Image 1: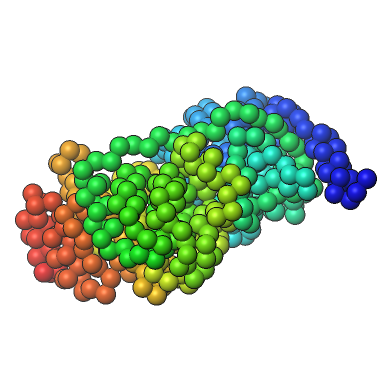
Image 2: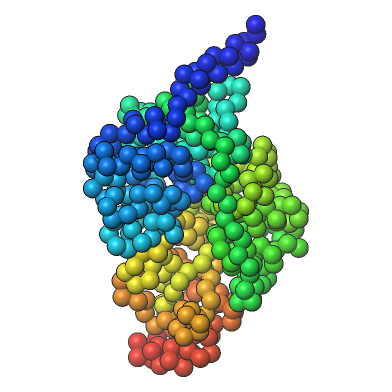
Length: 441
Protein backbone atom coordinates (compact mmCIF):
# COMPACT_ATOMS: atom_id res chain seq x y z
CA UNK A 1 0.00 0.00 0.00
CA UNK A 2 1.49 3.35 -1.03
CA UNK A 3 1.62 6.45 1.18
CA UNK A 4 -1.21 8.27 -0.64
CA UNK A 5 -3.61 5.31 -0.30
CA UNK A 6 -2.72 4.88 3.38
CA UNK A 7 -3.30 8.57 4.08
CA UNK A 8 -6.61 8.50 2.27
CA UNK A 9 -7.75 5.45 4.23
CA UNK A 10 -6.79 7.11 7.55
CA UNK A 11 -8.64 10.30 6.69
CA UNK A 12 -11.77 8.35 5.80
CA UNK A 13 -11.58 6.52 9.11
CA UNK A 14 -11.26 9.82 10.97
CA UNK A 15 -14.17 11.18 8.95
CA UNK A 16 -16.42 8.31 10.02
CA UNK A 17 -15.41 8.74 13.64
CA UNK A 18 -16.43 12.40 13.59
CA UNK A 19 -19.64 11.90 11.61
CA UNK A 20 -22.80 12.68 13.60
CA UNK A 21 -26.36 13.96 13.31
CA UNK A 22 -27.22 17.65 13.47
CA UNK A 23 -28.86 17.07 16.86
CA UNK A 24 -25.70 15.44 18.19
CA UNK A 25 -23.61 18.36 16.94
CA UNK A 26 -26.01 20.88 18.49
CA UNK A 27 -25.78 19.05 21.82
CA UNK A 28 -22.18 20.23 22.27
CA UNK A 29 -23.40 23.82 22.78
CA UNK A 30 -23.53 24.83 26.45
CA UNK A 31 -25.13 27.80 28.16
CA UNK A 32 -22.91 30.87 27.86
CA UNK A 33 -21.11 29.62 24.75
CA UNK A 34 -20.17 31.99 21.94
CA UNK A 35 -20.81 30.62 18.45
CA UNK A 36 -19.69 31.89 15.05
CA UNK A 37 -21.28 31.05 11.70
CA UNK A 38 -20.34 32.29 8.20
CA UNK A 39 -22.43 34.67 6.17
CA UNK A 40 -24.90 33.67 3.48
CA UNK A 41 -24.67 30.23 1.92
CA UNK A 42 -21.93 29.23 4.36
CA UNK A 43 -24.41 29.13 7.24
CA UNK A 44 -24.74 25.49 8.46
CA UNK A 45 -28.52 25.30 8.24
CA UNK A 46 -28.97 21.86 9.79
CA UNK A 47 -26.86 22.80 12.81
CA UNK A 48 -28.72 26.13 13.21
CA UNK A 49 -32.13 24.44 13.09
CA UNK A 50 -31.05 21.75 15.57
CA UNK A 51 -29.67 24.44 17.88
CA UNK A 52 -32.92 26.42 17.68
CA UNK A 53 -34.89 23.26 18.49
CA UNK A 54 -33.17 22.98 21.89
CA UNK A 55 -32.90 26.69 22.65
CA UNK A 56 -35.05 26.48 25.82
CA UNK A 57 -32.44 24.18 27.35
CA UNK A 58 -29.86 26.96 27.04
CA UNK A 59 -29.20 30.34 28.61
CA UNK A 60 -26.95 33.14 27.43
CA UNK A 61 -25.72 31.60 24.17
CA UNK A 62 -24.36 34.26 21.79
CA UNK A 63 -24.19 33.84 18.01
CA UNK A 64 -21.81 36.13 16.11
CA UNK A 65 -22.57 36.30 12.41
CA UNK A 66 -22.93 38.45 9.32
CA UNK A 67 -25.89 38.27 6.92
CA UNK A 68 -28.05 35.45 8.26
CA UNK A 69 -30.30 33.10 6.26
CA UNK A 70 -32.06 30.96 8.89
CA UNK A 71 -34.81 32.76 10.86
CA UNK A 72 -35.20 30.09 13.55
CA UNK A 73 -34.04 32.03 16.63
CA UNK A 74 -34.71 35.63 15.58
CA UNK A 75 -37.72 35.93 17.87
CA UNK A 76 -38.35 37.90 21.03
CA UNK A 77 -38.68 34.78 23.15
CA UNK A 78 -35.27 33.51 21.98
CA UNK A 79 -33.30 36.34 23.62
CA UNK A 80 -32.74 34.78 27.06
CA UNK A 81 -31.61 31.57 25.37
CA UNK A 82 -29.85 32.51 22.12
CA UNK A 83 -28.95 36.09 21.29
CA UNK A 84 -27.40 37.24 18.02
CA UNK A 85 -24.71 39.85 17.47
CA UNK A 86 -25.28 40.82 13.84
CA UNK A 87 -22.35 42.30 11.95
CA UNK A 88 -24.57 43.00 8.90
CA UNK A 89 -28.33 42.57 8.98
CA UNK A 90 -30.30 40.60 6.40
CA UNK A 91 -34.01 40.16 5.70
CA UNK A 92 -33.92 37.51 8.43
CA UNK A 93 -32.23 39.53 11.20
CA UNK A 94 -33.37 43.07 10.35
CA UNK A 95 -36.54 43.12 12.46
CA UNK A 96 -34.77 41.51 15.41
CA UNK A 97 -32.09 44.21 15.38
CA UNK A 98 -34.57 47.03 14.95
CA UNK A 99 -36.72 45.76 17.85
CA UNK A 100 -33.79 44.99 20.14
CA UNK A 101 -34.03 41.19 20.04
CA UNK A 102 -30.56 41.11 18.47
CA UNK A 103 -27.57 43.45 18.70
CA UNK A 104 -25.80 45.21 15.85
CA UNK A 105 -21.99 45.40 15.81
CA UNK A 106 -20.52 48.27 13.72
CA UNK A 107 -17.53 47.12 11.68
CA UNK A 108 -15.63 47.27 8.43
CA UNK A 109 -15.89 43.85 6.78
CA UNK A 110 -12.11 43.75 6.29
CA UNK A 111 -11.56 44.04 10.05
CA UNK A 112 -13.90 41.25 11.21
CA UNK A 113 -11.14 38.61 11.54
CA UNK A 114 -9.01 41.03 13.59
CA UNK A 115 -11.99 41.93 15.80
CA UNK A 116 -12.55 38.22 16.32
CA UNK A 117 -8.96 37.70 17.37
CA UNK A 118 -9.08 40.62 19.80
CA UNK A 119 -12.62 40.74 21.19
CA UNK A 120 -14.95 37.85 20.39
CA UNK A 121 -14.61 34.35 21.87
CA UNK A 122 -15.40 31.34 19.66
CA UNK A 123 -16.47 28.24 21.59
CA UNK A 124 -18.14 26.65 18.56
CA UNK A 125 -17.49 27.45 14.89
CA UNK A 126 -19.75 25.95 12.24
CA UNK A 127 -19.68 26.15 8.46
CA UNK A 128 -20.80 24.55 5.22
CA UNK A 129 -17.98 22.89 3.28
CA UNK A 130 -17.38 20.99 0.08
CA UNK A 131 -16.67 17.23 0.39
CA UNK A 132 -13.26 16.15 1.71
CA UNK A 133 -10.51 15.38 -0.76
CA UNK A 134 -8.07 12.48 -0.57
CA UNK A 135 -5.66 14.54 1.52
CA UNK A 136 -8.22 15.32 4.20
CA UNK A 137 -9.11 18.87 3.11
CA UNK A 138 -12.53 20.51 2.82
CA UNK A 139 -12.98 23.98 1.30
CA UNK A 140 -14.99 26.87 2.75
CA UNK A 141 -16.31 27.21 -0.78
CA UNK A 142 -18.93 29.96 -1.06
CA UNK A 143 -18.28 31.79 2.21
CA UNK A 144 -14.62 32.22 3.12
CA UNK A 145 -14.88 35.71 4.67
CA UNK A 146 -14.06 35.35 8.35
CA UNK A 147 -14.67 31.56 8.47
CA UNK A 148 -11.01 30.56 8.55
CA UNK A 149 -10.34 32.90 11.49
CA UNK A 150 -13.34 31.56 13.43
CA UNK A 151 -12.08 28.00 12.99
CA UNK A 152 -8.54 28.99 13.89
CA UNK A 153 -9.67 30.67 17.09
CA UNK A 154 -11.89 27.76 18.09
CA UNK A 155 -9.01 25.33 17.59
CA UNK A 156 -6.54 27.52 19.49
CA UNK A 157 -8.87 27.99 22.48
CA UNK A 158 -10.07 24.40 22.78
CA UNK A 159 -13.43 25.00 21.14
CA UNK A 160 -15.40 22.83 18.72
CA UNK A 161 -15.52 22.97 14.92
CA UNK A 162 -18.58 21.62 13.12
CA UNK A 163 -18.65 21.24 9.33
CA UNK A 164 -21.78 20.59 7.31
CA UNK A 165 -20.60 18.66 4.25
CA UNK A 166 -22.72 19.23 1.17
CA UNK A 167 -21.84 17.57 -2.16
CA UNK A 168 -23.70 20.38 -3.93
CA UNK A 169 -21.16 22.84 -2.56
CA UNK A 170 -18.44 23.74 -5.10
CA UNK A 171 -14.84 22.98 -4.37
CA UNK A 172 -12.93 26.24 -4.65
CA UNK A 173 -9.32 27.33 -5.03
CA UNK A 174 -7.42 29.85 -2.93
CA UNK A 175 -6.77 30.23 0.81
CA UNK A 176 -9.96 28.49 1.85
CA UNK A 177 -9.05 24.97 3.00
CA UNK A 178 -9.89 23.26 6.29
CA UNK A 179 -8.17 20.02 7.30
CA UNK A 180 -10.11 17.25 8.99
CA UNK A 181 -7.69 17.36 11.92
CA UNK A 182 -9.18 20.79 12.79
CA UNK A 183 -12.73 19.43 12.76
CA UNK A 184 -14.49 17.88 15.76
CA UNK A 185 -17.95 17.10 14.31
CA UNK A 186 -19.17 16.35 10.77
CA UNK A 187 -22.77 16.63 9.58
CA UNK A 188 -23.72 15.40 6.12
CA UNK A 189 -26.30 17.33 4.12
CA UNK A 190 -27.47 17.07 0.51
CA UNK A 191 -29.99 19.92 0.50
CA UNK A 192 -29.97 22.38 -2.41
CA UNK A 193 -27.90 25.45 -1.65
CA UNK A 194 -29.85 28.66 -1.03
CA UNK A 195 -30.10 30.59 -4.27
CA UNK A 196 -30.70 34.32 -4.68
CA UNK A 197 -33.05 35.39 -7.43
CA UNK A 198 -31.73 37.91 -9.93
CA UNK A 199 -34.18 40.82 -10.07
CA UNK A 200 -35.00 42.50 -13.38
CA UNK A 201 -33.05 45.68 -14.14
CA UNK A 202 -35.12 48.86 -14.05
CA UNK A 203 -34.66 51.72 -16.56
CA UNK A 204 -33.14 53.85 -13.77
CA UNK A 205 -30.62 51.11 -12.91
CA UNK A 206 -29.83 50.67 -16.59
CA UNK A 207 -29.09 54.39 -16.94
CA UNK A 208 -26.80 54.36 -13.89
CA UNK A 209 -25.02 51.28 -15.16
CA UNK A 210 -24.45 52.96 -18.50
CA UNK A 211 -22.87 56.06 -16.96
CA UNK A 212 -20.48 53.95 -14.91
CA UNK A 213 -19.54 51.64 -17.78
CA UNK A 214 -18.56 54.65 -19.90
CA UNK A 215 -15.96 55.56 -17.26
CA UNK A 216 -14.44 52.07 -16.98
CA UNK A 217 -11.51 51.50 -19.32
CA UNK A 218 -10.53 48.18 -20.85
CA UNK A 219 -8.07 46.43 -18.55
CA UNK A 220 -9.55 47.85 -15.34
CA UNK A 221 -10.11 45.66 -12.28
CA UNK A 222 -13.64 45.87 -10.90
CA UNK A 223 -15.45 45.31 -7.60
CA UNK A 224 -19.23 45.22 -7.45
CA UNK A 225 -21.78 44.66 -4.73
CA UNK A 226 -25.22 43.03 -4.89
CA UNK A 227 -28.40 44.36 -6.48
CA UNK A 228 -29.93 45.89 -9.55
CA UNK A 229 -27.30 48.56 -10.17
CA UNK A 230 -24.31 46.15 -10.09
CA UNK A 231 -26.26 43.83 -12.41
CA UNK A 232 -26.88 46.75 -14.77
CA UNK A 233 -23.17 47.62 -14.69
CA UNK A 234 -22.27 44.03 -15.54
CA UNK A 235 -24.62 44.09 -18.54
CA UNK A 236 -23.09 47.35 -19.71
CA UNK A 237 -19.57 45.91 -19.44
CA UNK A 238 -20.16 42.81 -21.56
CA UNK A 239 -18.34 44.30 -24.57
CA UNK A 240 -15.32 45.54 -22.62
CA UNK A 241 -11.96 43.82 -22.93
CA UNK A 242 -9.39 42.40 -20.50
CA UNK A 243 -11.28 43.34 -17.34
CA UNK A 244 -10.16 41.93 -14.00
CA UNK A 245 -12.16 41.11 -10.87
CA UNK A 246 -11.10 41.70 -7.25
CA UNK A 247 -14.28 41.78 -5.21
CA UNK A 248 -15.82 40.56 -1.99
CA UNK A 249 -18.83 39.09 -3.84
CA UNK A 250 -18.87 36.64 -6.74
CA UNK A 251 -22.29 36.97 -8.40
CA UNK A 252 -24.16 35.96 -11.54
CA UNK A 253 -23.14 39.22 -13.22
CA UNK A 254 -19.46 38.47 -12.71
CA UNK A 255 -19.87 34.93 -14.02
CA UNK A 256 -21.62 36.31 -17.11
CA UNK A 257 -18.69 38.69 -17.71
CA UNK A 258 -16.23 35.79 -17.43
CA UNK A 259 -18.26 33.60 -19.79
CA UNK A 260 -18.52 36.45 -22.29
CA UNK A 261 -14.75 36.95 -22.28
CA UNK A 262 -14.98 40.53 -21.03
CA UNK A 263 -13.19 39.38 -17.85
CA UNK A 264 -9.96 37.44 -18.29
CA UNK A 265 -7.82 39.13 -15.60
CA UNK A 266 -4.96 39.32 -18.08
CA UNK A 267 -3.90 42.87 -17.18
CA UNK A 268 -4.11 42.67 -13.41
CA UNK A 269 -0.85 43.43 -11.65
CA UNK A 270 -1.94 41.42 -8.59
CA UNK A 271 -3.27 37.85 -8.99
CA UNK A 272 -2.91 38.07 -12.75
CA UNK A 273 -5.23 35.61 -14.47
CA UNK A 274 -7.40 35.12 -11.38
CA UNK A 275 -10.81 36.38 -10.29
CA UNK A 276 -10.54 37.00 -6.55
CA UNK A 277 -13.44 37.02 -4.08
CA UNK A 278 -14.33 36.15 -0.49
CA UNK A 279 -17.96 34.95 -0.75
CA UNK A 280 -20.56 34.16 -3.40
CA UNK A 281 -24.29 34.69 -3.80
CA UNK A 282 -26.52 33.93 -6.74
CA UNK A 283 -28.06 31.02 -8.59
CA UNK A 284 -26.89 27.49 -9.23
CA UNK A 285 -25.11 28.84 -12.31
CA UNK A 286 -22.61 30.61 -10.04
CA UNK A 287 -22.04 27.58 -7.84
CA UNK A 288 -21.47 25.23 -10.79
CA UNK A 289 -19.12 27.68 -12.52
CA UNK A 290 -16.99 28.02 -9.40
CA UNK A 291 -16.55 24.28 -8.84
CA UNK A 292 -12.89 23.33 -9.34
CA UNK A 293 -12.43 26.46 -11.46
CA UNK A 294 -8.73 27.40 -11.30
CA UNK A 295 -9.41 30.91 -12.61
CA UNK A 296 -11.33 31.84 -9.42
CA UNK A 297 -9.67 32.12 -6.02
CA UNK A 298 -11.44 32.62 -2.70
CA UNK A 299 -9.51 34.27 0.13
CA UNK A 300 -10.25 35.56 3.64
CA UNK A 301 -11.82 38.99 3.85
CA UNK A 302 -8.96 40.58 5.78
CA UNK A 303 -6.91 40.07 2.61
CA UNK A 304 -9.49 40.64 -0.15
CA UNK A 305 -11.00 43.77 1.42
CA UNK A 306 -7.81 45.24 2.88
CA UNK A 307 -7.58 48.78 1.45
CA UNK A 308 -3.79 48.38 1.34
CA UNK A 309 -4.11 45.29 -0.87
CA UNK A 310 -6.80 46.88 -3.04
CA UNK A 311 -4.66 49.98 -3.43
CA UNK A 312 -1.87 47.93 -4.99
CA UNK A 313 -4.11 47.03 -7.93
CA UNK A 314 -3.76 49.51 -10.79
CA UNK A 315 -6.95 50.95 -12.31
CA UNK A 316 -9.13 49.56 -9.53
CA UNK A 317 -12.84 50.43 -9.85
CA UNK A 318 -15.20 50.09 -6.87
CA UNK A 319 -18.97 50.19 -7.42
CA UNK A 320 -21.41 50.26 -4.51
CA UNK A 321 -24.91 51.51 -3.70
CA UNK A 322 -26.23 53.91 -1.09
CA UNK A 323 -29.52 55.07 0.40
CA UNK A 324 -28.91 58.77 0.96
CA UNK A 325 -26.18 61.33 0.15
CA UNK A 326 -25.90 64.79 1.69
CA UNK A 327 -24.56 67.89 -0.05
CA UNK A 328 -21.10 67.39 1.47
CA UNK A 329 -20.92 63.86 0.06
CA UNK A 330 -21.54 61.82 3.21
CA UNK A 331 -23.19 58.55 2.22
CA UNK A 332 -25.62 56.59 4.39
CA UNK A 333 -25.82 53.12 2.86
CA UNK A 334 -27.06 51.04 5.76
CA UNK A 335 -29.86 52.68 7.77
CA UNK A 336 -33.08 54.64 7.50
CA UNK A 337 -32.49 57.21 10.18
CA UNK A 338 -31.64 55.21 13.29
CA UNK A 339 -33.22 52.00 11.95
CA UNK A 340 -30.48 49.61 10.89
CA UNK A 341 -31.12 48.08 7.48
CA UNK A 342 -27.86 46.32 6.53
CA UNK A 343 -24.29 47.25 7.50
CA UNK A 344 -21.09 48.89 6.31
CA UNK A 345 -19.87 45.67 4.72
CA UNK A 346 -16.97 46.32 2.37
CA UNK A 347 -18.16 49.63 0.90
CA UNK A 348 -15.69 51.82 2.78
CA UNK A 349 -12.92 49.22 2.36
CA UNK A 350 -13.18 49.34 -1.43
CA UNK A 351 -13.76 53.10 -1.63
CA UNK A 352 -10.55 53.67 0.30
CA UNK A 353 -8.68 51.02 -1.64
CA UNK A 354 -9.75 52.38 -5.03
CA UNK A 355 -8.70 55.88 -3.95
CA UNK A 356 -5.21 54.52 -3.22
CA UNK A 357 -5.01 52.72 -6.56
CA UNK A 358 -3.02 54.21 -9.44
CA UNK A 359 -5.77 55.17 -11.90
CA UNK A 360 -8.44 53.99 -9.49
CA UNK A 361 -12.06 55.16 -9.35
CA UNK A 362 -14.84 54.65 -6.81
CA UNK A 363 -18.55 55.02 -7.54
CA UNK A 364 -21.41 55.32 -5.06
CA UNK A 365 -24.76 54.85 -6.79
CA UNK A 366 -28.37 55.67 -5.98
CA UNK A 367 -31.61 56.40 -7.74
CA UNK A 368 -32.28 60.13 -7.50
CA UNK A 369 -35.56 59.54 -5.65
CA UNK A 370 -37.30 56.97 -3.47
CA UNK A 371 -40.89 56.19 -2.44
CA UNK A 372 -42.27 56.58 -5.98
CA UNK A 373 -40.48 59.84 -6.56
CA UNK A 374 -41.77 61.56 -3.43
CA UNK A 375 -38.41 61.95 -1.65
CA UNK A 376 -34.96 62.89 -2.88
CA UNK A 377 -32.03 60.59 -2.14
CA UNK A 378 -29.73 63.60 -2.38
CA UNK A 379 -30.46 65.69 0.70
CA UNK A 380 -29.09 68.81 2.41
CA UNK A 381 -28.20 66.80 5.52
CA UNK A 382 -28.59 63.13 6.35
CA UNK A 383 -31.68 62.03 8.30
CA UNK A 384 -31.35 62.19 12.11
CA UNK A 385 -29.64 59.04 13.36
CA UNK A 386 -28.39 58.01 9.92
CA UNK A 387 -25.17 56.01 9.83
CA UNK A 388 -22.35 57.37 7.69
CA UNK A 389 -21.06 54.43 5.68
CA UNK A 390 -18.71 56.21 3.28
CA UNK A 391 -17.32 59.45 4.65
CA UNK A 392 -16.97 62.77 2.84
CA UNK A 393 -13.21 62.14 2.72
CA UNK A 394 -13.59 58.78 0.97
CA UNK A 395 -16.36 59.43 -1.55
CA UNK A 396 -15.16 59.82 -5.16
CA UNK A 397 -18.07 59.80 -7.62
CA UNK A 398 -21.82 59.76 -6.91
CA UNK A 399 -24.01 58.48 -9.74
CA UNK A 400 -27.76 58.77 -10.32
CA UNK A 401 -29.86 58.29 -13.45
CA UNK A 402 -29.17 61.99 -14.16
CA UNK A 403 -25.40 61.69 -14.36
CA UNK A 404 -22.12 61.53 -12.46
CA UNK A 405 -21.07 63.95 -9.71
CA UNK A 406 -17.33 64.12 -9.13
CA UNK A 407 -16.65 64.89 -5.45
CA UNK A 408 -13.11 63.83 -4.62
CA UNK A 409 -10.78 66.80 -4.64
CA UNK A 410 -13.70 69.24 -4.88
CA UNK A 411 -14.58 72.04 -2.48
CA UNK A 412 -17.73 71.93 -0.39
CA UNK A 413 -19.35 74.42 -2.79
CA UNK A 414 -18.34 72.42 -5.86
CA UNK A 415 -19.62 69.21 -4.26
CA UNK A 416 -22.99 70.76 -3.51
CA UNK A 417 -23.44 72.03 -7.07
CA UNK A 418 -22.27 68.76 -8.63
CA UNK A 419 -24.70 66.78 -6.49
CA UNK A 420 -27.61 69.12 -7.16
CA UNK A 421 -26.96 68.70 -10.89
CA UNK A 422 -27.53 64.92 -10.64
CA UNK A 423 -30.52 65.19 -8.30
CA UNK A 424 -34.03 64.79 -9.68
CA UNK A 425 -35.12 68.07 -11.33
CA UNK A 426 -38.18 68.23 -9.06
CA UNK A 427 -35.92 68.65 -6.03
CA UNK A 428 -33.13 70.83 -7.39
CA UNK A 429 -34.79 74.08 -6.39
CA UNK A 430 -35.20 73.17 -2.73
CA UNK A 431 -31.70 71.71 -2.64
CA UNK A 432 -30.33 74.99 -4.02
CA UNK A 433 -32.19 76.93 -1.36
CA UNK A 434 -30.92 74.62 1.40
CA UNK A 435 -27.37 74.96 0.06
CA UNK A 436 -27.66 78.76 0.20
CA UNK A 437 -28.82 78.63 3.83
CA UNK A 438 -25.77 76.53 4.65
CA UNK A 439 -23.46 78.83 2.67
CA UNK A 440 -22.58 75.97 0.33
CA UNK A 441 -23.24 77.94 -2.84
